[in-house]
Image 1 (cartoon, rainbow, N blue to C red):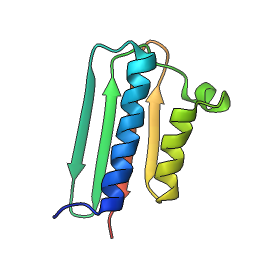
Image 2 (cartoon, rainbow, N blue to C red):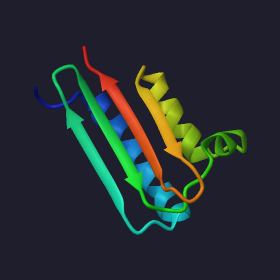
Image 3 (spheres, rainbow, N blue to C red):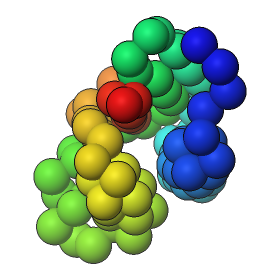
Length: 100
């Protein structure tokens, strides 16, 4: 396992940046955890917080630019993107990149 391609590095950086901005602006979180794990055929990144949480479907329908931008960035690269959250339970953003 070597260094990630510049496209993967930049994409993960931009998703992490957006997720952190959203957490700081909206979540009222006390803790944020960022985890990046590289395996032979994949890289996964998870960002979680202990903030106030939200309903992801409502956020998408109401046009949450940050959430939609993260999802579009990941999916345009063929990456898996998931958000888990509910009011009162924090949030978790998970991105998985399958490497050739």
